[in-house]
Length: 327
Image (cartoon, rainbow, N blue to C red; front, side):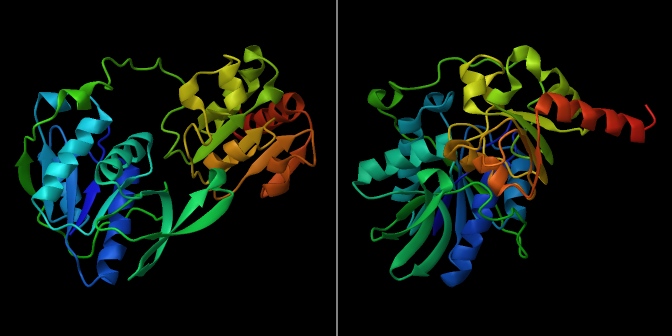
């Protein structure tokens, strides 16, 4: 059996990267002769979520319930997954390569004293089980052999495109209320706050992202960039230096320690393209870079580039969009 940790969004449904992970699991299942795929979900499991997971071919949905799961605690989630593994014969444990997915499966691997592969892109064989994963911020690929069973790994965001299964599963609900040690709750989320409304939207699913880096110059230098974002109906994404300087909120950050995006179009303005930022935007289908430095890494890797000051180029783009719209 293949076990997939599924994360939920605010709507109670599986987030896109979790659906991608289940899709990845199906290809692994097919290569292994049709191994069943089960999901692990923490907290409430709605009928809509079960229907969604059934459409993706999930056989059973293992729900982890109890007070220990009222808030996120990586070690407690790992203890819950261990309870599922104890009741099943599992050959692979997977999760999306999100902060939570990586943390929880790292706990599972540590409990078992085995290796874990993070940010896997493909698998190259089942016996031995070999995977290829991203390392060095996505700039290099590493082939890794997972000799233990179950094999434990996370899947890089957008390694595959999420797609329903040709044959739906039953998504039968299986309840679990495992005992969780006090030590597993020492590190946990005790409170959370919703960010104020902004232009970041859902960066991971945005079709167009307007990016900005140090070249914006200041917090006030974002006026034209904000207008461009609104004109194209996109989301704002920024480099780490922008958030470090306090010009824009952290949840807009794109990069290795921020969001990984795959829009149809990414427009990085005044962003040099450091390896950490490139790790978050390299999956964009097309990149239009605006920069004064023709040799900047972002410019050399872009699909298209405009060499110039963003404070001159972006207002011109905005004006042309408005002109074509008759505004």
